[in-house]
Length: 120
Image (cartoon, rainbow, N blue to C red; front, side, top):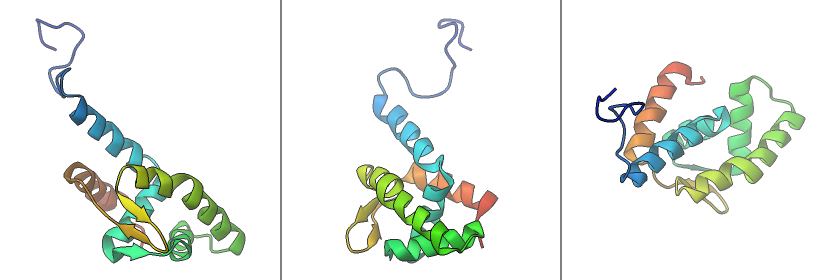
């Protein structure tokens, strides 16, 4: 801790650096969910996929390949994960889900996460 600002850590962005703090918060939020990480792993390798393909791959990695499970994943992708990633400009959703951009912090943290849990 700095002696001139008690209670405030010496690391991290300064108060005026809202963009950096938002970027890190966004990265952590995107990577906080396992299915979003799995989508990003897959798209990082393939570049694009349709939602059915993503759901099939996620179900395979999760070890549950029933049709009911794939449908739950598909619904969750459409209504939760893909919109969140689309809002951040990471993916573009159309006929196929296109991998658009991995900003440097996201790419670094995704690579780190992949080393720990990369599904086979």
